[in-house]
Image 1 (spheres, helix red, strand yellow):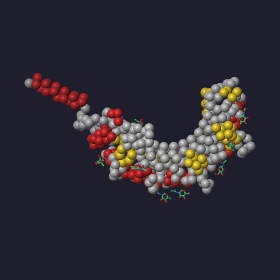
Image 2 (cartoon, helix red, strand yellow; image 1 turned 60 degrees about the vertical axis):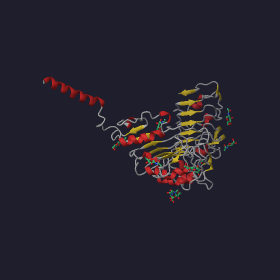
Image 3 (cartoon, protein in one colour; image 1 turned 30 degrees about the vertical axis):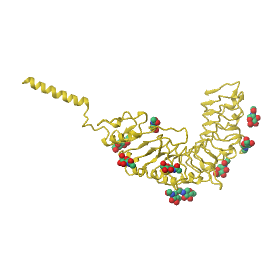
Image 4 (cartoon, rainbow, N blue to C red; image 1 turned 180 degrees about the horizontal axis):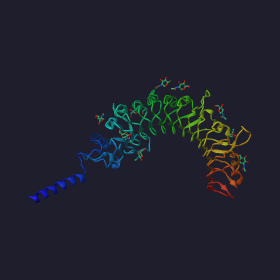
Length: 417
Ligand SMILES: *[C@@H]1O[C@H](CO)[C@@H](O)[C@H](O)[C@H]1NC(C)=O
Ligand SMILES: *[C@@H]1O[C@H](CO)[C@@H](O)[C@H](O)[C@H]1NC(C)=O
Ligand SMILES: *[C@@H]1O[C@H](CO)[C@@H](O)[C@H](O)[C@H]1NC(C)=O
Ligand SMILES: *[C@@H]1O[C@H](CO)[C@@H](O)[C@H](O)[C@H]1NC(C)=O
Ligand SMILES: *[C@@H]1O[C@H](CO)[C@@H](O)[C@H](O)[C@H]1NC(C)=O
Ligand SMILES: *[C@@H]1O[C@H](CO)[C@@H](O)[C@H](O)[C@H]1NC(C)=O
Ligand SMILES: *[C@@H]1O[C@H](CO)[C@@H](O)[C@H](O)[C@H]1NC(C)=O
Ligand SMILES: *[C@@H]1O[C@H](CO)[C@@H](O)[C@H](O)[C@H]1NC(C)=O
Ligand SMILES: *[C@@H]1O[C@H](CO)[C@@H](O)[C@H](O)[C@H]1NC(C)=O
């Protein structure tokens, strides 16, 4: 009798221990929701290039919050981020839309608390009929980040995208947007009144895109690098309407001037960074208006600046901290303002003059830059020796890069002072 009871007790104890060790698959609460797990499994065949989604298994009770490329809210165990970038075979050596396909956006509907969706590099050409991004707008009301870069999307997707009013960050770079195909296409984006970052670089947009940006007043960052903007920016007023803009990238276009024919100039009083590298600015076309009084960083590298550069054109940028003039053909600085030849940007901390044709007289023209921390002047025409006296003004200098010159009697080649 006693023996029987003891055996029973042992059996019960083992059963309890097994439950504890195996984990209670039926009663657990921190695994992901079953319908989100099943929705992920429906997505898997579309994004499983090279079997990257190995951890997405068809096992009932498997916690999909622990699957690769999935992130959940730790409290609610609901999906908040899905990183399906580069998950499909995508081949781009020529202009054909190889492996192009159409997305069924409704497949994301179960992820009601999704905040970030990364779909870049997947050869997506658009959406299936009646299955556009607009379908997500009422259900995925927390969606803030959408990355659709490196796909084959064109202007026809804009109508459905413009319904995702919760978006704060939208990356449409390296697609096939033209800005002309669909009437009002880009203007529709102005319905996204929470949008802070818009990346349109690497498309085929023309000057009129600036006009279509004019209602996106919440924008803080706008990237338009590597498009087909050219000459004088005739629709510059559209940019000037973006009064909250802090960062503007217009690099690698064919822009010659940031003012238009009737004299309207770029006027963005909150702008802090402007990238104009890889354009066609010449020494007589750079002139910056007072309207850029907050500008801290200006990149003018790889333009057509050559010979003697009139620094007067930069003198309105009184708060500038970083100036990049690398990869041009500038020989010297010239200023008609004080009859001298000095660059008068007293707040400047970083100056890049690499890959130009400066000679050792350049140091004399930088004498007013007493706050300079970093000076890069590698690969120029510096020859012979440098008078150490010329460097005395730079009391805050931490980095001096003079590689690739023909300096002889040299005290410091490069490095930290
Ligand atoms: C997770 O969800 C809770 C409850 O909805 C919310 O308060 C919290 O901010 C969320 N955390 C994250 C990181 O989203
Ligand atoms: C996907 O995007 C995320 C977020 O930008 C990034 O951290 C991750 O490295 C990317 N993964 C791949 C495979 O590109
Ligand atoms: C898109 O996906 C949803 C949800 O999986 C499905 O109900 C619908 O039939 C699909 N639409 C098309 C056109 O395949
Ligand atoms: C834009 O994309 C849609 C959907 O893929 C396609 O039907 C249309 O032909 C494309 N338009 C252009 C101008 O390429
Ligand atoms: C953009 O703003 C202009 C001027 O305020 C207005 O007339 C126009 O309707 C707006 N466009 C859109 C698409 O909201
Ligand atoms: C853009 O600026 C112009 C000139 O200041 C103004 O007339 C126009 O209403 C503005 N448009 C928007 C959409 O803010
Ligand atoms: C400085 O800005 C004012 C007002 O925009 C302009 O008239 C002047 O030409 C600018 N100066 C230079 C040197 O560009
Ligand atoms: C602009 O560059 C040209 C060509 O190198 C040069 O001849 C001219 O002196 C420069 N103009 C100014 C104002 O420095
Ligand atoms: C340096 O270049 C300037 C402008 O090109 C020239 O006037 C000057 O003679 C040169 N100085 C030396 C030492 O070569």
